[in-house]
Length: 103
Image (cartoon, rainbow, N blue to C red):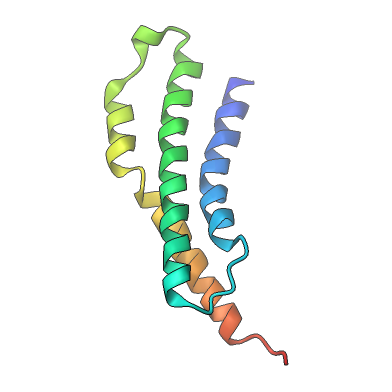
């Protein structure tokens, strides 16, 4: 059950930056879209740090066994994966919005 909870939280850290970015985003203004992308990456970074802490505490059972190096790594490089997810979402969103047929 612990691995299910950890894996579910990991999937949420992948999906939530994309959902935060797509929330009411019409891709018309580059400035507004860029700010939404920045906020989504920051939110994903915070979730990634939370995921690192939760996965350490759930699997170790004792607070003194938490690996500080893993937490430091996620604090420094935790923005990379949310940035890649948001960039891919942005590219797909721009492609879809430019090729959408409508009035």
